[in-house]
Image 1 (cartoon, rainbow, N blue to C red):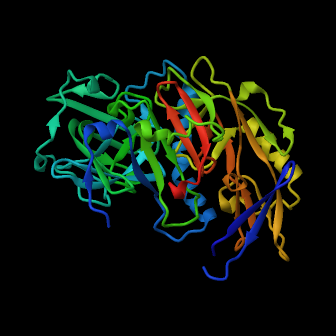
Image 2: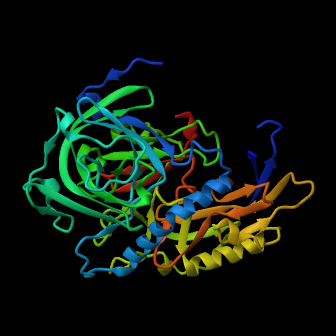
Image 3: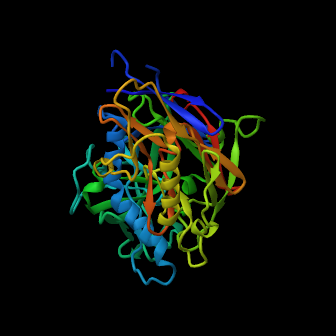
Length: 450
């Protein structure tokens, strides 16, 4: 059953109104290189968008996928420098798919978008070992624009990933014990934007995986890394900014989210006044350079600034701790000591009974909805204080109601070694990464209308 959520504002509370409804071709145009430099957009779809799940079910499925990702991210943050790992392990996986075509003629693939890793790769024939994927495996022999990457290439410099053996070979490991191994290649990548315009980009370096394993990667036909390293799509395109706008989870199943690359990324919001644009610096972690770190300084629930030491959110000199913003992690995770304070405050301010069913949802804190005459419930406001900005979240970005289960749950959890700002908290915000200014912006946006 679909739930519609209406929000009413009071000085320190939000009112969550739960309503149960009575009833549940343009020709392609090829853009030139100049147009590509001006920016383009690509549609994104949630991995589970083709299924009719409730919002809470979607979160539960995402949490099941994210367990190993969270563990690996936390262990990476806790390890610090000098760990002696020969082949670094990356976050892997993601929650959103983007359509990409590779080669000439262009062969379409649906690939996972991941802001927590850099490498672009797909499975290639002849495969020694390939997992089952939604589309046929890419055959380099059938592309007239395909070429090998030499060992002297800038794309083959990180010897923790690559080795020179009859060309540039790579091994990339992910946190859920998935992996891809093969050789680096170059080919034309073609993106079709939401206006059905075709954007071909030549000589994109990517991994041709011939030995790949891991069920966690089978949702797509490879992965497109959008991290801060030289192998990522943003780095290879040479764009100075990119953004994404994620539609509400469990909302209109036919609406798609959007990835914007290049000068189009800010939608001209930042050039005007009074558009609600908020900016915080991106922080560089030299030990984990792929990730987009931001500085969280505090959290307010209702009108109470939580008594949490700033040290719990700080990026430490050894590379541990801190907070990353991540498109591939569903809910926000806070260092356990901080989350425990947040949890206690929500329990104090919510006028509902704490549910004993939290264990079955996968979330740490749920409340029982009233059994009779449910029209609205009071929810405290939630505000994150980042360096340079205060971000007050809409209630649907942190509370999930499921009338059939009689529950409303907080979409946040505890982490052991780092904090992560998840994608539910990013819904209906244009999340702009300015790579030149090294800033991150949040622009309130109705993402399904882009």
